[in-house]
Image (cartoon, rainbow, N blue to C red; front, side, top):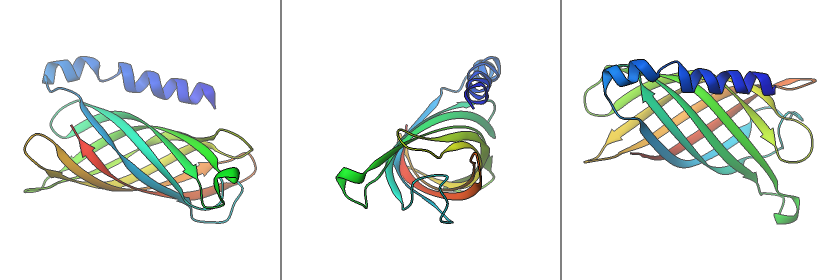
Length: 168
């Protein structure tokens, strides 16, 4: 799994650099909150929803396409603080902005991972998603839905993340 994550990180960091500089649009940074939960009762990730924070940087390739890398940190807290399980969830994505007036709609997809700090489970992920960015004066608010498939050692499971936050 580490070679996969390293290859994804290199792709995100190196591939768009020249195009982004030619397009001369600055990177966009996003921060927000997420709720993430397995849709089936599997041992691939901890049971129950996790509450977390997420950050992402998007490098524009042109006006319609960006590449991004993000990291989330979630906590499964609903069984009490003593039983809390923490999960790290990196993602690399291609973001395509759809034509619209007013709010920006976008779709995205890519790969990443769900990495529990303790216990078993987790694994690489494939994801797609849909988002809406609502422009303000200098920033935008966003909401997005991000279904994923976690590929575990013995099983795979669908996971759904719902996010909201601010893009700078």
